[in-house]
Length: 269
Image: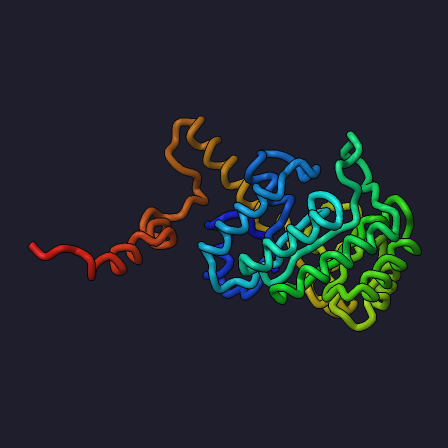
């Protein structure tokens, strides 16, 4: 499941043959705010990004990042209903505290029972449209693996469809999280670089994960491409050596398709 953030990233993902994609909060924060994923992006901005993705790639099944629901349990319900009514296939809801502490370190989380109520609210709201709920716990780094596993178990009790134990330290912790999911699919972040166990795709499948996403899989190469283009222009050139040929770029962006679709509406002289 590639991570997407706008129209072109979604269109390319669909064209590459993928059936599903993750509307990533970290990618949207990078794209819209030019910064890190530190809970500064709003529901309105995320929902606008979803609209762009949906319109550019209507056949993709989108898992939308609902973050912490942008408030209390009632805010969670609004978030879930909005994504469901707009056509998202699933929505992620996590147990982090909002607003976050004024530091980029750690992931302070809600008390366990308050987290339960958020998932309960999400599951109830999901019934309106049939959207799936992915329940995520971020408590592993701050409260330990035992608490994280306990939260996965209560999220299953509340009816979450997909489970996500973030930041497992090793394969043993991964196995505990997958077992706690009780047969429901477990989700993993598989991009390298985080302070977590990061198996390969093949290893993740062997461990029992059913869904994986790659938040930096397209974002990082895209940023590198922009940097290369800027460096080339600054050095007096026109485009980086990695740039697409002009004809290929125009085709990818849909110029020939537009002409074909517009042809029946051209007035005859």
